[in-house]
Image (cartoon, rainbow, N blue to C red; front, side):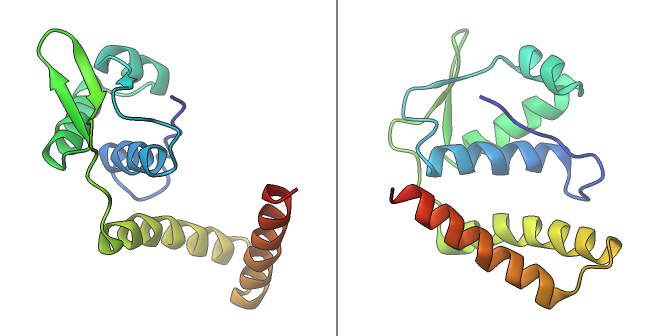
Length: 130
């Protein structure tokens, strides 16, 4: 499981972890029963405090995305709760905010950004159907 944390993102790190795990589950890259890395291991990989990873895992457990097996680890729930449309849009809203802020910082117009998004979408769609 490869996660990327961006301290400049403006989104709390534990939420970045939650959102990325949910994305991996929704995309099928993490399946029911798959084990998440131990808290300490993931904290070392991301160079963050283990308490931050523990908070993310606790939040994911509350949302029904993962289950903790006492003494055994944290696993993707057998029937992970599908993200509601509202939750999906919330995840994407945070990423959109980051992208818009970066575009503004780079002095890229909204029109240019939308054109880039449409181009990338077409390229990904064409590549997936080859």
